Image 1 (tube, rainbow, N blue to C red):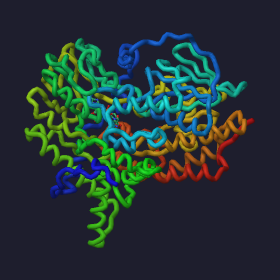
Image 2: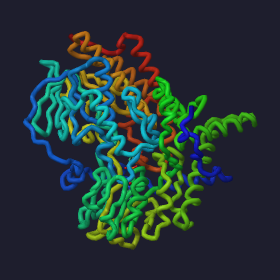
Image 3: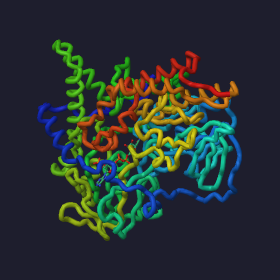
Image 4: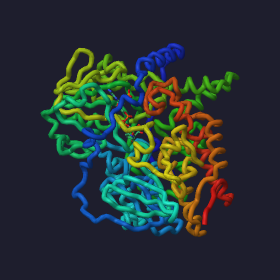
Length: 608
Ligand code: NDP
């Protein structure tokens, strides 16, 4: 049975004729314009006088508790999807002694912090939300809003009894391996000292907000905040909008990434004046959200969730599937590729690279065509058109963002790829115009590409007092991205040396299944330690380098406009090893499953 939400027409108009060489040249010019010497250094870290940007505005009450000094089997850092999925899998494997340490006031991670108006998951909820069958839950809409996802995260916490033992409003400040007792000693900002047999890092890939290092950013005297700590006290309203306190305010938003695309329509609805400062336009595809059909939900057969996740992952990885269950802007590119492939086969000329390129041009022409359809002023429309390859930057999906620029109170300030020139006491300067505003909202994203310790907020100190930062100074080194020699009983969850998928919780599902499998085996067999062997780690790094970036990696290749997908357009030799497995996520997941079913625990050393 089909969910009507999946069969609607989610596609924009058909592509116009185009000149591929002219487009290639235009893409090159747009990239050149944006390349900057300072790359990742252009951003300011949220410490010192910027530290308040990461304060928690959502806490109802600060916890007051005594320091904890005890021992657990597994300590998980982070109570977002990674932490929740790890704990769920560990519980399923029979591990009882678990503790989650979370800096927020509850479970939810990304969805705890990102409560800006309109915050919504733009990957289909039926494939994005984890553990749906385990909890017997079907999301309310095809694309779930943040509130539902936050509540669902809490439901996972309750289902697996994770509130017991979880410590919220607590930040890990140190993690040190004590060889004499074969335990990790985990310290926190609340003076806890917890001994853990195993530790698992679920800090999240995009957890640390970043600010643009625009000259004068210190000087501004109006109100400011980052989208991941939305100040409803100032704006009024809630994630559903009604930001009534902005009625008499002039508001600036810096940034036009996936976050801005979702919150700008709500700001435009109420602010007296809204200025959107754009450096690079996003691709804004059709959203087409709709409620879940209860008949469809009740017709779902056991196994449906994994099947749908795999179907989606196949399509966004460029692997044709018998059907497109999700059928949206994410999966549309593959449809275009197949169409082009068919045409080429009929003409008897198959050139895969050319087919991929032409399908990408088709898709981007469609995206640009949509801007013309929805934005009344042709000059504004032109500025909102992205000129780069699809997937150079994260695609976005929204039906209200583009029409917001038809409102008389909303102005697009396009900086022609240069960004805001200067911030003054009372506003922002682009070219020779100063825009005076009462409030600046930073929709400038999160740190990517900085050191693991900087993003996590603590060092992991392994055997012989060596930190992970020191070990990885010359390049990342792991087995399967999850374990690194010299750091026994320690598990990592991320894309690097693991896999990339557009549906991040799918990766977490596979990683946490694997981690729980290894930890429960070690516990059952009374192993004191589990650690990667030197040859296994070397072999995996070699595989990573040999496989290269693979098909998906090449979508965000070096000739793209700069952004966090390509280290701001600056190839970084130290990060050459920190790429996902080039064979793609499907192959990587199979490889992990095969490794587990072999039962050999190949490449791991268990110490007693
Ligand atoms: P991004 O990093 O995607 O966007 C930051 C924006 O700030 C970019 O438009 C960037 O421009 C702009 N910017 C940076 N510096 C300046 C400057 N000096 N002057 C002007 N503009 C500047 O952050 P987001 O918070 O939007 O999104 C981060 C990620 O979070 C997404 O990529 C996505 O993975 C995730 N997300 C997911 C959602 C979901 O539905 N699942 C929803 C929202 C976010 P430029 O492009 O030129 O660098």
